[in-house]
Image 1 (cartoon, rainbow over the protein chains, first blue to last red):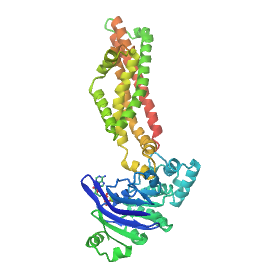
Image 2 (image 1 turned 180 degrees about the horizontal axis):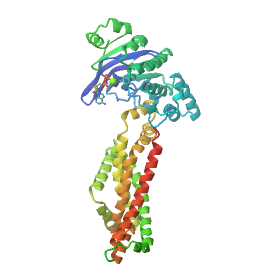
Image 3 (image 1 turned 90 degrees about the vertical axis):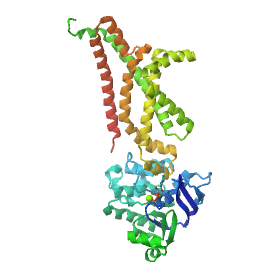
Image 4 (image 1 turned 60 degrees about the vertical axis):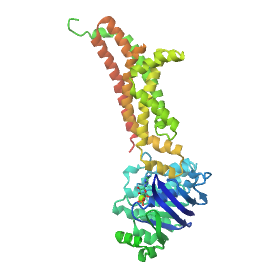
Amino acid sequence: MIKVQDLHKKFGDNEVLKGINCEIQAQEVVCVIGPSGSGKSTFLRCLNMLESITSGDVTVDGHNLKDPKTNINMVRTEVGMVFQQFNLFPHKTVIENIMLAPEKVRKISRDEARERGLKLLDKVGLSEKADQYPSSLSGGQQQRVAIARALAMEPKLMLFDEPTSALDPELVGEVLEVMKQLALEGMTMVVVTHEMGFAREVADRVLFMDEGIIMEEGKPEQIFSKPTSERTKEFLNKVL
Amino acid sequence: MEGRFNWAGVIEFLPELGTGLYYTLLISIVGLIIGFILGAIFGLGRISKNKIFYSITSVYIEIIRGTPVLVQAIWIFFALPLITGFNMASVTAGIVVIAINSGAYIAEIVRGAVQSIEKGQVEAGRSLGLTHNQTMRYIVWPQAFKRMIPPLGNQFIISIKDTSLLSVILVPELMFQGRLIASNHFNAVEIYTTVAVFYLFITLTLSYVLRIIERRLDVQ
Ligand SMILES: Nc1ncnc2c1ncn2[C@@H]1O[C@H](COP(=O)(O)OP(=O)(O)O)[C@@H](O)[C@H]1O
Ligand SMILES: [Mg+2]
């Protein structure tokens, strides 16, 4: 589903990604952990070209992102993204947030978009909020709407960038629950997270990033129980 | 007059002042509509990555903001025909002055409002597969427009009052009429006060309308 080869990313002179290699299979759930500033977000954002690629190759669902012939908007319709700050559209109601892209990009009818949106709201447990504005929702509810909005495009792959980091602790669970459900349904997911419990339980594989490279990767039980790299041990000691 | 005001005497001149009001409104409305369109275009120029578009926009804005409206009016009405041989009626010239002048300020208002929309909004739109233009149209503009309303209201009011300077290019607007009457009838205080009331009437109505629009848009 995703193939990353020797990915480098520079912001000016600051090299943030220093040669990332990895492959992610369909239906795999991969959690990316690592200290703040290590390039996790940048890596994730390169996967849907929210950041341009300095060098290396990224192939998503068979499309080479650097190929000028690749229609990036098309690729993005297959790749959902959920942000730390939710980024719901404040001038649109919950259901309008969800309907916008299916209508404008997938060109499905209003009725169909609404029906699809209501189904997804039901799935994330928020049917009764359809016609409210995001500002009247709690953070956890907003993030669940954001997940529903991304799912409305029926993506093949979902990217999550610290989806629970902006939430009050008591609201984290409801969002992780939705994500877990999604994983069980076989969605391909790349999740940057500090929720080690979630990573341990749901991930098929964990990548530990440090200073712009993937320092270590493996099954969660291996990474969490017997990490090989000193940096991984150090990091896990701090967060666990 | 014997040291007393003669307000009743003003009534006699209401037809002239009415004509003035008509031209003031005409020039303000048409000028500001065009000014808004110019402002939207050049506001986008100010955030454009296209260097040529950006440079043209910046030069335009700096020249307009850095020179008095009065001089701009004189350039357009007197100097432009000398250079180009193209004559404009004074009312047309007045509309052009207000449009070009307000356009420069509105461009900055548009730029500020668009830039004030959080980057995450654009990223959310693009990550869903919306094109740049769709993201602007459905996500950025509606939010930016709401933020533009208070400063736009300010600029509209400034421009409406700026039309009073157009009397130098012989536009028969309110101030022009007022000055004409006052110089013939020696009732300057009464006439200019009446003129001021007319301006207040326009600007207060505008403020009121803008407040209603703002409330309509303030759905949250
Ligand atoms: N748009 C940007 N411009 C310049 N530097 C950036 C930008 N985005 C991220 N960085 C830098 O890249 C580094 C990695 O950031 P990020 O990928 O956000 O790390 P993480 O998500 O692991 O905390 C940081 O040093 C950050 O300052
Ligand atoms: Mg981050």
